[in-house]
Length: 242
Ligand SMILES: [Zn+2]
Image 1: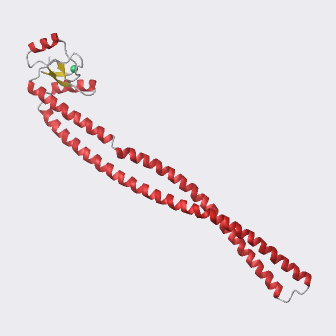
Image 2: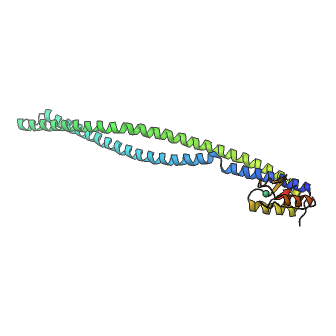
Image 3: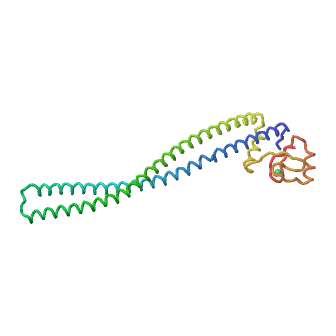
């Protein structure tokens, strides 16, 4: 039977307070809102990048279309110039040949008008894609900046909590060094089992560990025991401080 002086039990209560504080700080550290915010932001960023890739490809393909059509207009212009040179060179004199050249020029100009109409259609498609690409880029940049801010804030909060934990741990080990190892071992074992409370005050008939009333007979029995005798709550098993 382990004995425990009222002072050592008082120490145990203080140690438990520190352990609770450490657990609360660890919980706080693991549940910092920044962590979830960063996860959400990374998800949003990934969606944004996929959208941007899609729009960029679409834009590139439209720009290629535009370039191809513009090249065609240039080729038509060149061909028209050539035919006009032929027309006015004086080398072609037969009416039939001249009319053929004029017919060719008219056909080329008709084709040019069609291609230019197509260019306008493509340009009207390119414009909103460019605007969308720009706005996606701005959004991406803002998200990346926000991510960096959140990560910095997370890091600083984690460090702050770590320092608090170190302080409390220092406090705890000081208290522990003043407590008998055998009693500490019992405390640790009960705490591991209950997951939280291993020592509690007996307040009248009520155990402050489980908040249940002990039977009157049990309370009577405890009162008669020497003050150094270690007793446990029948209900929750924690060490009772009488
Ligand atoms: Zn209890």
